[in-house]
Image (cartoon, rainbow, N blue to C red; front, side, top):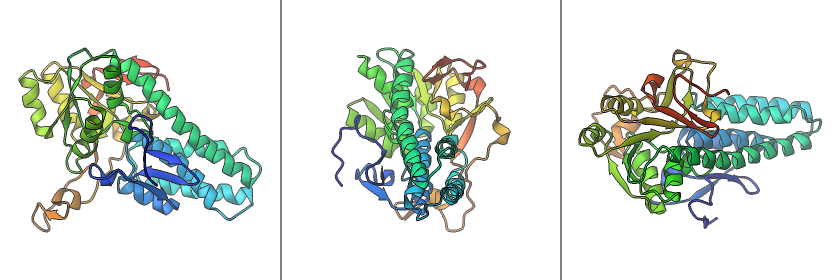
Length: 342
């Protein structure tokens, strides 16, 4: 299968007689779609970051339920529902910090429990997954239009990790705001952090922006403070994997940029759909995913650290809301402590 759609029209995850997604581990060298043949296959794709980003994981969770329903051999509706519940629990555990994954699974499961037949369950699961995917693009475009009002013509904007169309079904959250501002005729220059240890900023964000024709400069994350001090960054904008009532959970390193932005009196924005909000919990309730030492100790098979060295490799950190200037959502812009109703 050859991906021929343009960057803005194509999707990172979709259903075409089965579940397909862009393998993000191959970027920026190769844009390759892969077919997901089983729930086990999907979980591997999630844990290996072939598919990643909160909104994309929400769609992946829902499509996972549709896939499990499609692959089941039973025609007994009760038994099929039990199988889907078990599949959902396994999928949700594959990445514990990003709330959208559980949200997508649970929404798909809620759509099938009212069905009386196995065929009705299969149809409802796929219908709900497709609806989530379609909604994601519409939500991100609405979010983008609102957030674009916060960016001025000529702004230089710092971003961290990847919150573009690759992190969503399409369009993007933080990069969706930038994309919307550019579409509105504003000249925006992006400083993209490389985002070690897996380089989502250099591999994915820079790739997206280069293909979009949006001006981008790639930096190591430790350069952001120096650039702020020199007056070369006007604003910062990031996405989110979960927003609790007191903190934003996003890719590790986000907190550093928020502290630096506060010190330099620069706006620090977070762009996320309402599905990423988890206002029933606080920072202390959330498990932050920790990943293997190999991500820190090697790159492309080249060893970077001595064998056996102790490592600490959290995938995310928590940024207190008092460091966030505004939360950009599809329903409006909220300035903490004001929060949306979800």
